[in-house]
Amino acid sequence: MTPSTTSTTQTGEYGGYASDNGNTTRGSGPTEAEQQTRVLVNMLFARFKAIYTHKFASAYSNPDEVKLAKREWAIALKGFQEPLLAYAVERTKEEHSWPPTIADFLKLISTAYKAYGLADPRSAYLEACACRTDPLQYKWSHPAVFFAGSQAGWYKLKSEEERVSWPLFEQSYLKIVDRVIAGERLIIPKVIMIEDKQTLSVKDLATKIANDLSVDEEKIAPLLYYTQKTYGSGVRIRYREISQKKLLEMGYKDKLPK
Image (cartoon, rainbow, N blue to C red):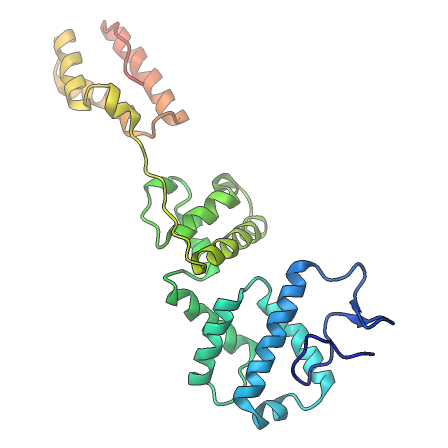
């Protein structure tokens, strides 16, 4: 078999087999994402060899060990982009005198997220799940969490099991992280309170209705509780209908604002 042409270390191939013309094949061939991961792992091992010299050679003493190790690293690092890996390599030089294990390196990647002001994917997922009911009202640790939740689907985060919702969120989050690292600024849209522009304030409305019915304001205020719910939501509509019916029974015939 012909060694991989992308390798700059004593790597051999991994994740594929050499064909007669020297090209690496595996079934229908690697996907673009798999090829990207392969390149990054080769680069990573080249950095480790340069940093740790004979210690690296001692840890990976023959091509078969390197090939197996690369496969495991490729699985573990799938989805991570070069800036995060490069940051983790720099931290590796500071913290590890021997080539790191996969677990060691993943911990350093988590610190790379912090360097960009981001939460790691798992923490971001838990935050999105905890705040999925009213995402526009929540103060997010980073806009990336909000946009990943939006792409994955707030309804799915609320209704689907974790085995379904977590992969959806993780995939969306990693893509958005790439955009943040590339310098894109994410801005969460602001809530526009439409009803504030076209209706009386709740206090003024309660006073008006109480005066029209010649009753105490305290009896009217609870019937306007629906105005505290999100504009256009099903809950707000149902509460308004109940209030409208009770006020009609009391003799108030005007329509309540939506």
